[in-house]
View 1 (cartoon, rainbow, N blue to C red):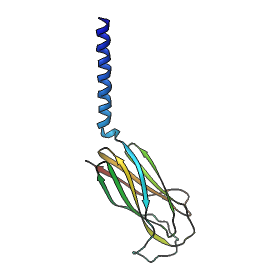
View 2 (view 1 turned 120 degrees about the vertical axis):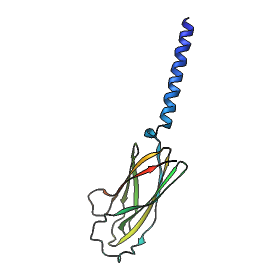
View 3 (view 1 turned 45 degrees about the vertical axis):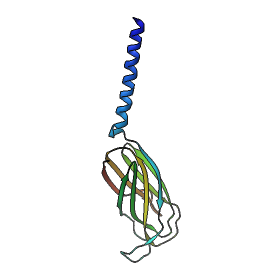
View 4 (view 1 turned 90 degrees about the vertical axis):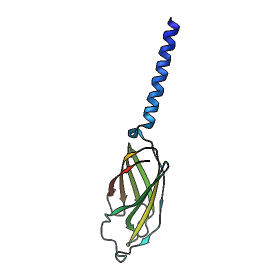
Amino acid sequence: MKKWISMILGLAFISGFVFYCEKEFVSPEKSQLLYLGAFHHGCRPNTETETTVAKTVFNKARLREWTQQGDTLSLTIDYESLCCAEFKDSVSIKDNRVELMVLDTLHGCRCICNYVSDFSFKYSGNGPFHICFQRWGYGESGYTTLLDTVLNLSH
């Protein structure tokens, strides 16, 4: 009798464990998000205004496009910075909130250019995806949020 009770309890434990793991895998609240990397395109001349001496704060960015193919999510972001900027990127991920940060590590130019950065993620979920893009440029005391938006993703 003890043998049967032990077997039943063992099967119940294994069944519960499998159910719990399966539930965690498909739950959109627990989706997996993995940063794959970024590519920063070089300076693109500013066509809206003449390239001028940089005396203003660059406070605009836009999400040019995003694509989701299979489990790969790609984001393309346009923003302004100094002409000779050399960017180092970092990412902070918590749940479905992603903070994309670029730091200008090469200072000295005094003109403004448009930049485009492509960010790639492995993403196996659905639902809202919060994106916050920040840049720390020359003369700034910290990161400045240039873009804060939410994408609603679905497969």
